[in-house]
Length: 310
Image (cartoon, rainbow, N blue to C red; front, side, top):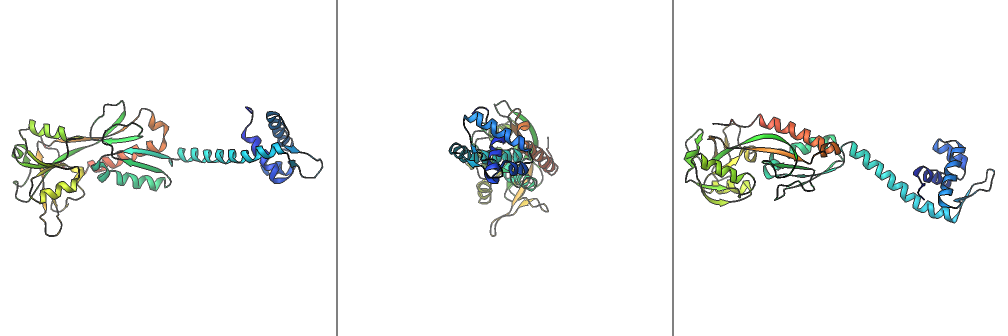
């Protein structure tokens, strides 16, 4: 059985369906002698005949052993064809990748990345998750606001400046000196990802806001700011799609106040990275293309970001 190959099964199936060696040869584009050699090799491997050959133009008859081989051989050939198609799809960038992300990247970068990838590879499958632990693990790609403790290949996509969001007239117009936030009530993200570094950066600049509420949801934080609980310091990526380009405000629902967005001086900045395992980009064309598209989208976004003030 070690010598059994797919060509022999393909030839056997053609003979069974065509009825004669000559018609099978014509169908497969082989010479009749090649067809005979394939079947002879198959029968040597199996240790028995798969066809009774009556001779002349009469059709061959499959033997009981041949029936067993043919029943299982059809499954083998179908799986081989499925494997070949899957490999072709993989090489064409239509496989599957698993991507870890974070809220603001899911909000600002990934929708454009996914749209562009699906236009190029409509049959690709991209599975997304927002892991609590920023580790690659079994992921193919990981977006994270910083470096990880793992040995990864990575690229810095963009620097994302933090901005102050407050009720109108709560702060002077224009850039806000960081010291103005000292002691101010603040609604903030949980102490995960880049948030602890932000708060240390503010403290180094002389600002120790009083955290009155934490939430992982940006919309929830904005709602609490509208309700007067305090101001917020949020990265630009998290809010840029809701900031009015004409007036620089975040418009509230009917009956609720708009929010004013201020630059912060000096400007805390977080860096958004894309990580992947060493060598993985060479293994998966879809992952490699995702990296390329993410870099292109991030470059365009970076050109729209507000200035970093020192």
